[in-house]
Length: 79
Ligand SMILES: [Zn+2]
Image (tube, rainbow, N blue to C red; front, side, top):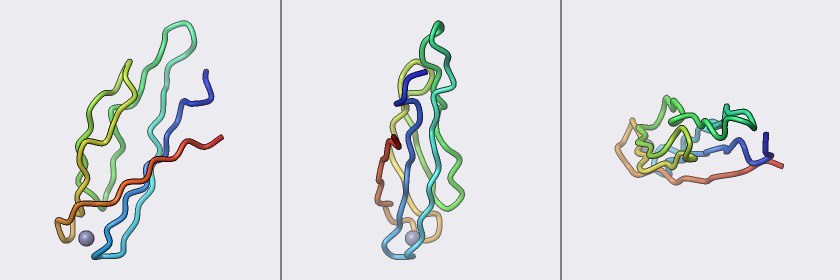
């Protein structure tokens, strides 16, 4: 496993002042290559993802379920 096998996504709605953080992980093992989650199940935000499997997923769109505003996205790779 590489060290870059998990990415934390933090979504934030400025209007509602709500935040939520979830990790997206690579479940693959060395010999079979990458096997990324296809996204993370956020409860406060509506999310659309691209990628998954061999490709590290990317958050294509994130909107707040309460007010419909676009969420602020922060990606973070822990050491
Ligand atoms: Zn909101």
